[in-house]
Length: 448
Image (cartoon, rainbow, N blue to C red; front, side):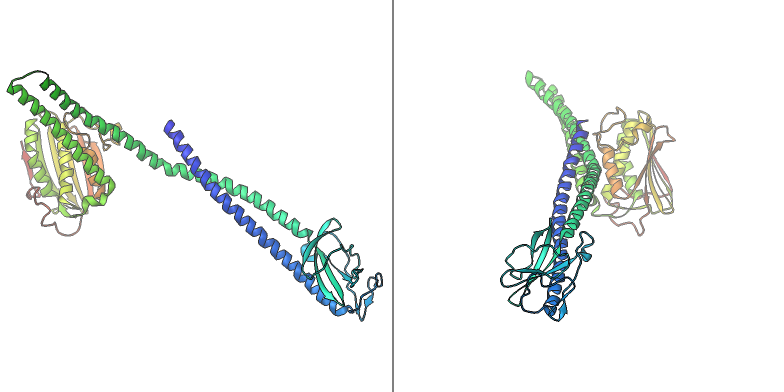
């Protein structure tokens, strides 16, 4: 429960961080967008005002006009004054523009119908914003006849457009942040699931390894303490040393298996750096020969069968195949029971090559078949072994592209079968070197 809560909190922190980053990016993007929009709209107004001033300068005489001397719709000089009726609101493109003339003494004459009062300002020919009639106007001016022609237009619509864009950005930004947080949380939980599984398996593996290593170490320590507690005869010391030697070998076996599995976890491809086309027949035959003494000690009938088409080739290294078969045969001999039977079969049918190991032991219950390849997992209480053999076998099978089948054996116990795709080509000349000699592919070898 605590682990699940920790995983959830970690995912929340990741989602919060991702959301914060997206929020910063969204705010910066929205600010830049708003600045660009306002700038473009303002530039459009400036262009319109500039055009109005140029047109008015052409149609308005250069002499100052007396206040009130120009009636709406009348002419000044030889050209009519612009007449544009004032109205509020509307689209920005349809917003009204007004014209005023300011003489050298500062007197203002409205050249447009409905133009509001022009605020007092020191005109310099630079566009500026001023408050007029409760709204904001954009003004531009042009020196003319010793005074100024002034054009103005309401830019309240720009503010409204900017506000509407800001509201849309806030709404969309909020939705974006919610989606980002939820999506990051889901992704974080899913991404952390395999990591959490690996962490949990690593913790279990460490605990199991510590237990397995502690047992022989405890035995060695107890044997040494007992031997040193009082003087003993040479035979007693010899017995103690033999037991210590046995536990030391067990320790070495566990450490060797752990190092092999660590190598397989770190770089699975390294297990088959020397992969060649290996014929299972000589490798399995040699392995059966090696385990005859083990089988005879328990009165187990160990047999070898080669069936189907010849050249049962698997792409692997001979050492990996030998280790796989050794693990399966050793496991079968230990569980077959006194007076039992173990049968090793290699076969090829078409493009499929198989290795099958049957035993007459208690078998593997269905509820244990998914965990049988877990490290330190044991189905029964058969003596010997480190609990790592089938994990090593599974690493070899996965590395070589094989697949497992676990079933009930005709001998009464377990049947473990590995199937590969037949490797094309010819068996390597070194494929059987050091692991055995080729056998007749069609004869059954029985070693009682």
